[in-house]
Length: 223
Image (tube, rainbow, N blue to C red; front, side):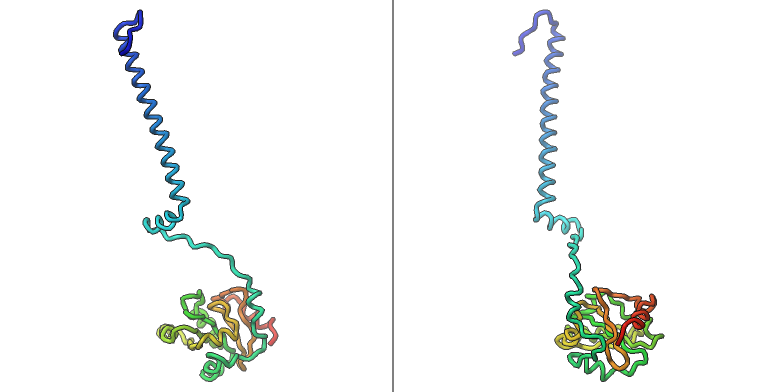
């Protein structure tokens, strides 16, 4: 019970008590607000750093997780296994069939190593075909993997008027002999099936002809 203060009126004493209660209520609100902010900050820290939440939240909100950026391996390590310039097309895997079934080409042959599936590469066979045709260079491809998938790719190209035969490379034997260490790697063979050029540094150039790069390669590369 509050004791009256000498000299204070009843209204003054009532007002003082009301102010004290309001001050205590305001203090409790501030304390609760501070605790709420601290709990919210702690919860966000857990969400942002806990691996369980890092995996589940993108799925919950329909956000695709960001793929890690991996450094490209040193191509020179792989290319040390390349066949020598001037070497014949290897007679392994799809090699003999390619030589037997490909008509003689005045401008030579551009071979594409597709790996185990066409979707693994950014190589655009249709674009290369349209560029190579006026130069009388035949574009060919070979791929390992399921035979049905390889035949399906060849049929799809033919439906679009792209005359690029796709050969089945059993056990990836030809890819191994040519060191096709990445899907989409290109090789150029002269009309007598001698290796003149191979793509380097993980490069996929769908504008190989239109940029003049291929012509420069032919001029500067010895057979």
